[in-house]
Length: 226
Image (cartoon, rainbow, N blue to C red; front, side):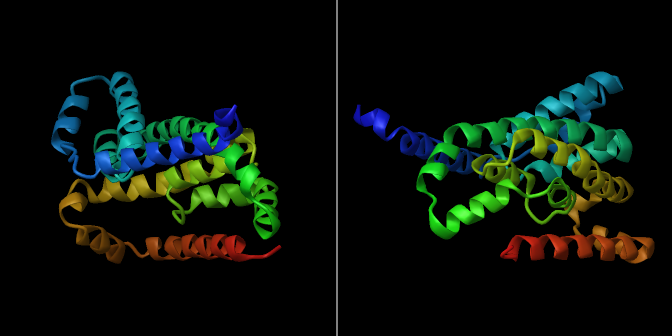
């Protein structure tokens, strides 16, 4: 009976412990980009794309900050368009897993614990419009991993969240993959290569300002009290 009484607390502790364990387990693991690239090039597009998606979902689930490597490798092998398609499909898979993991193990504790001002915030997040969710997915303000987990802890419906991901993620991903495709693998060894590319392409300055405007709008929305 005692365990049943504290079920939500136990589930939430399991949820946090799993995230911490995954975090520490992946800190010292290095990814061999050359091996991944060489292996994927041995297969035709459909097969290599499928393998890439599966690897992306599994590896980035355990190594939260390994996505940079997959972004660059995807851009180099598949080009901006196909890498965008494959990355978005993988991100939708990750969103499904992480959102529902947080919803199953953490939402009960949040509902039981929040009160007063925090309950108002929870209700506010649950009622957030699809447009704002799309903007949050389209700008790199919050890493997708943390957004997926955080959304699962709120009362946002998964259908609305997935719709925002489907609409917003391709915008951000194609922009990112096009630049990485143009710069190439050099960006992993020399981050200044990215800066040089931006300096040589003035159209990116305009697009960057638009993107920055969306980021500012997203921040204002997060900090607003309405």
